[in-house]
Structure formats: C-alpha cells, structure tokens
Amino acid sequence: MFGRILLGVLLFLAAGCEYAAKPVLPLAEGGKLVVLTVNGPATWYEDSQGQPSGFEHDLVELFARDLGLPFDYVFVDSLEKAEKALAERRGHLVAALLPRRFDLPGGLSWGPSYRTAQYQLAWRASFPRPRNAADTSGRSVGLVGDAFSDPLVAARATLPARIERLPPDTSPEELLERVAAGTLDGALIDSARFTVARKHFPQLEVAFDVGKPVDFAWRVGEVDQKALLDRMKVFFARIAKDGTLKRLADRYFAHAARISAIDAGTLIERINTVLPRLKPHFLEAERVSGFDWRLIAAIGYQESHWDPLATSPTGVRGLMMLTEDTADRLQVKDRLDARESILAGARYLGLIADSLPPRIREPDRTWLALAAYNLGIGHLEDARILAQRKGLSPDNWQDVKLALPGLADPATYQALKHGFARGHEAMQFVDNVRNYQDILARVEPRDGPLPPRPAPAPADQGSTKGSVAAR
Image 1 (tube, rainbow, N blue to C red):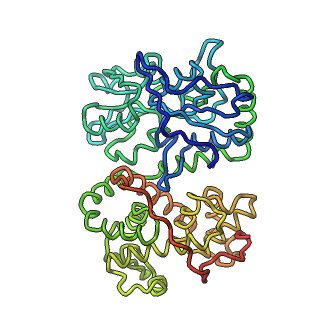
Image 2 (image 1 turned 90 degrees about the vertical axis):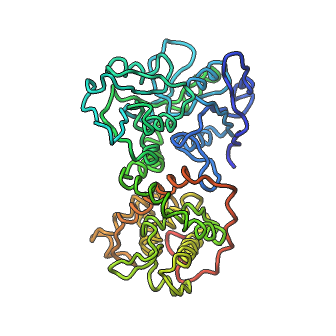
C-alpha cells in the first residue's frame, strides 16, 4: 500500500507528557513525508473494506505521489494538539480540515486554501428554531476550539447565547450528540463536518449561518517549509484546474448532503424495530458474498424499506426488489421470501462486481456495481463509454457519475447500444445506499473482519469484457 499508515502511533499531548514520535528529518535526509491528522469521517477513516479513506487521506496520497515520496501518518486527538506537534517538528504538515486564520510572520505557515465552509448553528428540530442571533439569548451553544479559535471568536461576536467551550479533543459527533440529547440547545460547527455527521442526527437542523465563510488549508511546519509550500501551490492549482479536487469533494461530501432528516430518522427507527429479525439473513449474505452485511442491508432498505412483500407496478418484487428474470437466473423460488431475496440480491451484486474489469479498485468497483444494480450492467457500460469519450475515467465512480445524465438525453442515448435509461435515478440510488450504509455502520459496528470475496464465476451475459470501456 502506498504510504504506511501508522495506526499505532498516537500522540498524547497533555501537560507533562512527552511525544511518542521523534522530530522529523528534512525530506532530503529522511525521504518520508510525515503528516499529522485526526481520525474522523471528514478527514481520515477506515472504510468498510478496512482500507484508509477520507478527503484528507486522498489529498495527502496524491500530494505524496506528486513528491515521489512515501508518507506516514501520526494521529492526534485534536486540531490544537496537531498544531502543537507541528510546532515541535513532529511532522512536516497538518492535513485535517484546519480553518485558515491570520498568523504573525515566522514559525508555522499555511498552504493554499482548498475548500471553503461556513460555520452554522445546529439546533434540535423539535425545539423552537431561532430565526436570528437574538433568539439564542439565554440558550446554551456548544463549540470545540481553543481560546482563539474562529468559531469561538464568531460566537462571542455574534451570539448572545451562553457559550460552552468543549475540550479540544471532542469530536464533531460528540458535540452533536450533546445537542441531540438535550444537554446543549445548539452547536456551532463548520458546514463540512456537519454535512458528513448530520445523517446520524436526523433530529438536528441548521438554524442559520454564523460569521464569515472560512477556508481550509494545510498547516506547514518549519522543516522544508519553503520547498513544501512551493510544491503545494503547484499541486493544488493543478488539481483545481483538472477537476480532481472537485471530484474528491464530491466523493466524500456530495452524497452526504443529499440525505434528508426524514430519511435518516425513518431508517434509525427501523433499525430498532425491523432490522433485528432480518439481521441474521444479512449476516448470512455477507458470509456467502463477501460484501459487508451493512451494505447489503442498505441496498435492501433503499429498495423496499425492508418490506419482504414489496411489489412495484412493473413487477419488481421482494425485499431486494428483484426482477423476474434476475430471480430466475439466480434460481430464486419465492421472491417474497426475505431470506431468499437477501441472499439473491447479494449474489447478484457480486455477479455485477465480478463482471467489471479487474483493474477497477475499491471503493469504485462497489459503487459502479451499485449503479448497475439499479439500471443494469448494459446501461452502466454505456455510461462508462460516455465517460471515456469525455476524456474521463470509465473506472472512477465520480467520473462515470458525470456521464450518467447523458443516458436520458435524446441527443446522446439514441446512439448508445442500450438506449435510454434514468441515469439520475442511479446516481441517487448510489448516494442513498452509501448514506444508509454509513448510518448502519455507526449504529451496528463490525464484530470482526470481512470474509473474503468468493472467486468470480465464469463470464456470462452480464460481462463487460470486449466493450470499449473495459479494454
């Protein structure tokens, strides 16, 4: 794997404690980029396949590749401690969605801004929502930050509320949990972090924006500072120009912004009431298919809200909403039997994933397979070909996603092998499944590693081999 991930290296920076890591060497001597970060869904996390993921992770990997260097992560438990570690030369840079602010000359420096966010007041939907800052008078508003942080400065300048500053190692999820539980009336949080966390807190909504927009940037230490800043300027300018930066942002934030509070709330309610009797079937499907059972459950929820008797006007039936042809192909005797439907749906997803070119990496392989689960492998292949014609990658979900609307464009689909398809619906399908899986992963953590995927079956009529995009 490119870049060893040092999960065991945690820095505890409380008073009186020494760092676990040694000061970094100049790159010319050490040959390794050391990056300080925090664990979280907006920065760095382990995905359902056990692989490192996250917006900052992908940016760091691309930058390190641009430098031609391997990289190590050092994990700390707050942004404040990350900057302290950087000042003590324990890393070359901090990559953790750090809000850019004014600094005096000398010492640490800022790289180019790469994302903009807005501080927002998150509020319980069941509580009278403040229409403006004056309505927060007498209410408690929590935030995370040091004494000079942007959210604290903005809150004190704007809100007459009682401001409660939580410890700097408090996660965004812990902050929002306090609002959901009623121990705080509201929380001040940036829109980037709230976007990825809000699906887990359907009872929260945005009351209004607070302060001015903020820019995120990497914090650069004194070791090799000028050389790194010079390379960063070129790197971020290039990925902004060629669309890579936007695709990464879409990959990690766009789907999370689309889920509604009603959708998330209904899922959480059904996790408690319906899922327990279906979970054994989803776990069995995981053992058979090698797919995370929470992904299979998310597909089932998207398709039928876990209703084994669901039937569409077009004759698609069952919990996993299988067509009659697909059910016959998978030798399903009763589409309305929950266990049969779940196992068949997982096997069908596996057949689709196995039909894609072997070079496609995760998680793109799974996301492309999900799109084909919704609209068919033939239409997915048309979309991959369209992406290739546009100079995009047919193996990257974010690129293929850009081509999907063309399947409903008469000027485009009439020249495609498989004709018209509702590409927008496939986009929404994948986004919904990803959001539902994220919620399930938070509520239902894994007990162990995923089982291995079974060997691909021999190529059949669903294979994409021989197509333009597959070559």
